[in-house]
Length: 181
Image (spheres, one colour):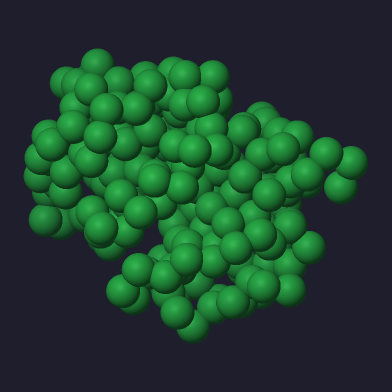
């Protein structure tokens, strides 16, 4: 895994092999951040990374200047790796070890951008419930939710759905919370 751009551009990070993760590919990550860099002033937003895994998305945001990032994952080894990497690279990433569902229910912090990458085996009902709760509690006005998922899921009928992008077997569904909606 590598950081695509920003102050740590090109830096390779090697996660422990025992982590139960499926990191976002460099190609997909680069394409996603090409979209985001035209939509957000990275230095003025707050980001929530759910099902953070190795922290790859959090590192990318931090490298590009985001000053407030919270990474949530229930795996203690993932959280330890993110904490160690953030400390080593002096990145502004805080972590929270608990299930994403519990975190969302317990905390109502608002973020400009929420990235969610659940296991591909996540079922449709869990997606729908989690997306609804995130929009009720965690998305700031004009904020975005990005869901990474496999090609078997479609969210085109969701009221906040904006667009979908496909990169190999990886899909990103982008949702936007518009003012007054």
